Length: 245
Image 1 (cartoon, rainbow, N blue to C red):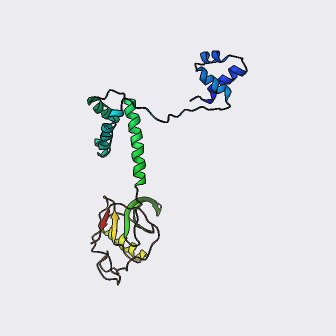
Image 2: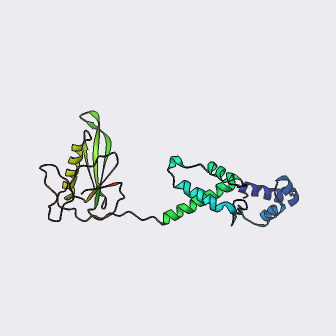
């Protein structure tokens, strides 16, 4: 690739200084064909893209290298080999080429694999009233002139993304239950399952409500049970699910 400054130097030397193409090629370390191409065209940038990358050394080893890369990609991140280690493994089997060829092949393989994975992606969808997501956040507020850190419980419907939030002074099983009870009262219904982080202890539940309001939905002692959720509108991806049964 010839950049704008090199092209300008060639044209300046020829048109202003009167240098010959031979002298330009010798002094600027360019081939005569390149100098001739610059002078005969009005382009300001010349790029060359190779249509096909020849791989004379790695060609016979492509199958083995693909197997190494595929096996390595399926391992946990801490157990994966670096590309240098894969190159050394290939050399141990008799490969006589260089590392750059392995690196270029691995880069192309990774890009093709990512494109195939993207094409196979299936959007996550939740039916209305199917699931809700629960999580905690820590917020700093000013209470009576004192800075206090409170714990905010978030209950979000996975389909419509409607959210309910309530602040507490601490995280406990009682506050989790209270947050669920108040959220379902706010939503006017319960969901069939909940989605929780591994750090959040799911509440003890008995099951979803039936259409007539019966059944064993999530509730506190003495709290009024809520009917099933009405229809929502848009999906939200969730986390590991806990079925209420």
